[in-house]
Image (cartoon, helix red, strand yellow):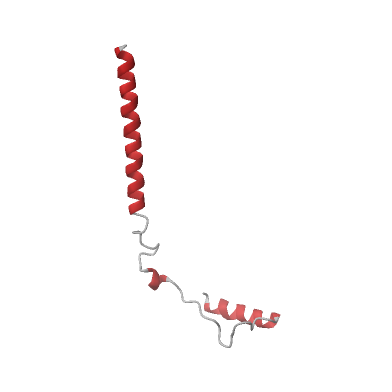
Length: 80
């Protein structure tokens, strides 16, 4: 009889310890979600390349294949 009580008490302690460790690690992960820095270690606004339209490009102006190829070559030349 004492063996069963000791065994059950150890099982409860083990389960509660595991659950509290899991809850603690999830709480730490939730706190650290937004506090990380970007991969390069600089502010995101300084590391982000600004995408700009090539000169002469307006909305709906890529209707011909020649215009698409011209825009692609301009973008590739700037290595965006």
